[in-house]
Length: 76
Image 1 (cartoon, rainbow, N blue to C red):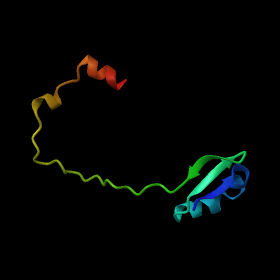
Image 2 (spheres, rainbow, N blue to C red):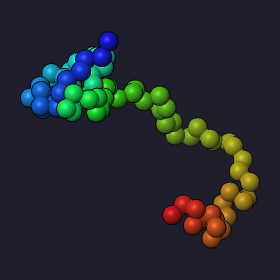
Image 3 (cartoon, rainbow, N blue to C red):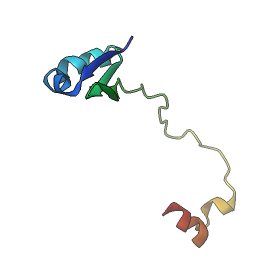
Image 4 (cartoon, rainbow, N blue to C red):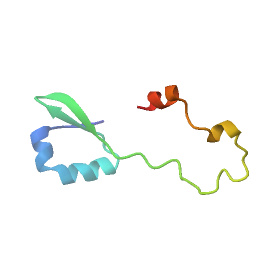
């Protein structure tokens, strides 16, 4: 069951609330009695980068060609 705390109380108890959230307690921050935000722990990293993971894989020559103007504009 989530713990609901108003913003003023959260300001004065932030360290305690962070510890509770880190331990798994869901904390809802309320403003004027209405839910406003959720305080929760960060998700653990699920993808660990491993150098050389693609060693031996073949890439098509098109992979190394410059992007077209249309593709570049899509990134902007």
